[in-house]
Image: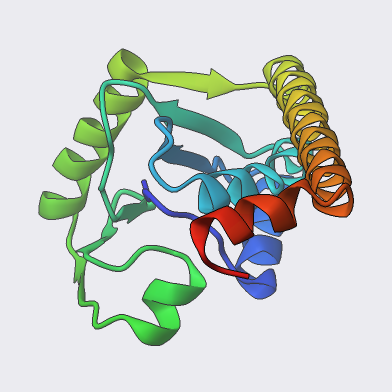
Length: 178
């Protein structure tokens, strides 16, 4: 489980290779958007993860800030570090690695409960629908931006016409400025 998940190339390849070998890889990610750029950057990786056989889940019960890993029911990691460039390279983070089944097994059960009860699995169909919606929103935003640009150009043009007509100079002279 990781709130902000943008792993480097080597970790992405390791996860995908493990899944292709038959290792069950489940990743619980932030489902609610609080940092849009990072959220959509992470979503760009979903297709490769899904194609490799990784199961992706998005936490829906609220904002998730978990930074937890459980491997082979024996090794666990808990800490403050996200798997993103900022956390890994710039921020002061700390993680604790525990290699003991008495810690790893209950943590695994807790995370699987969060996946089952509070998360939505990402599948290819849902991913395609989300991309389609994002494209529609993007197109609407581009259209709105173009319309604002046209309106601003029209305003500049009409201000230029007023300034060129001499009305601006008459108004400035009446105000005592020029």
